[in-house]
Length: 145
Image (tube, rainbow, N blue to C red; front, side, top):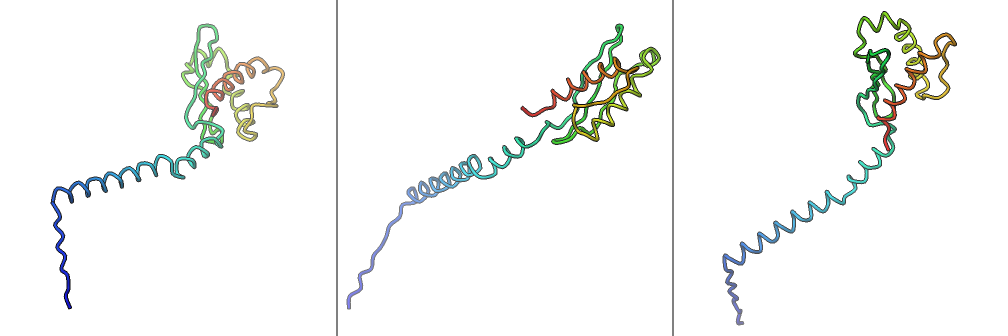
């Protein structure tokens, strides 16, 4: 019974090259998985379903050289807050209906989450239209396109 003993000679250089190429192959596979894997498509569908880009959006109103802003805060699907900012005391005194009209409009918008079919009193028509126009501009900035 003769057994043939085989001796394999491995050169250290070849082992190092093989290990480096295997490591590069693993890194390439991981990168390809993250680029084209299922996680990429899930994030796109989530952002496509959302109605707004979350954030705070403003629109300016100028009345007799007095400028102030209407600030609209939204999350992905809802209008969360509407308020007047940079409204100084002079403008408050000159236009006393601004804040009450905004509160009325905001409560309707919060409940319906729409800028359509908003009701306002006849004696507050122009104030309501100015504020509603500014709110509409801010909401358009927030919409996902």
